[in-house]
Length: 334
Image 1 (tube, rainbow, N blue to C red):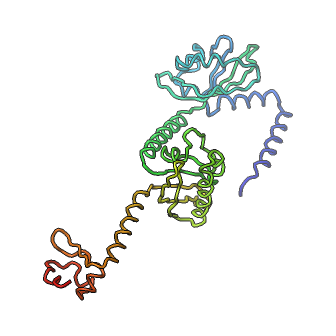
Image 2 (cartoon, one colour):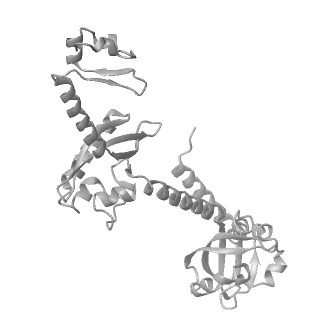
Image 3 (cartoon, rainbow, N blue to C red):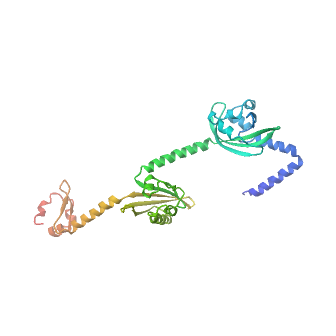
């Protein structure tokens, strides 16, 4: 059975109030000892005027490698890498009971190892002196993860920018997440902060491509509804009056529960290929309708093609002559 967090919190508060009534001073002191010395994060108390470390908890001793007495001979900046000590000191203006996050700093252990740490401060009165309690949360994994993600992002950018195709990634709401250089240049978005914007929003940046963006949004929805790879040809006009023809592939991605995750859009410029195909169609039409018999062979003399006029004149069907070699005798009178 799952516990109700609210009910559990109310029960704990009731328990604390009852304990405070029984033995307020002793209970508070014990509670402070548990929260401080038994905390899972390294914690220090230091003088805000001299930076001298006044106390350290068990986790700090274990994590940094110093004994509590050794800590008391150090100042808190001694635990921070030299190049970041000034940043720590400059941001240390803190009053009693004030809470402050200094962000991530590089710390160093007794053995010389360094690690990234989130530094959290809270001002307090320690035996009549202005002091500060600092909590250290290891952020090394976070930093390394961010570094790895950054390297992967750079690699992805390099790869897709090297592609002579449209490449665009969108989220479940149709907002652009990543587009390659070719895509941005094609739609004149090079100097536009496109991340997080939908096609409808990007349409407002270009009167010329407004319809193209809106039509793209419509075809995206078709891909979502299809729930599988969608492919088709799209004509994209250019400001110089020419038109480009793209073979557009859209791949919708879904979470295991069926909700939308993202959309991958890839478009290849097939303008030149379409021109060649059109020319070939024209040539084929001319050959097919030609009143003169036409025969085409390979370099070995094998027949690869004959037009309808050849068949009607020779009496041979298309199937009877294709692949035949040395067919010259049969051509007499054709």
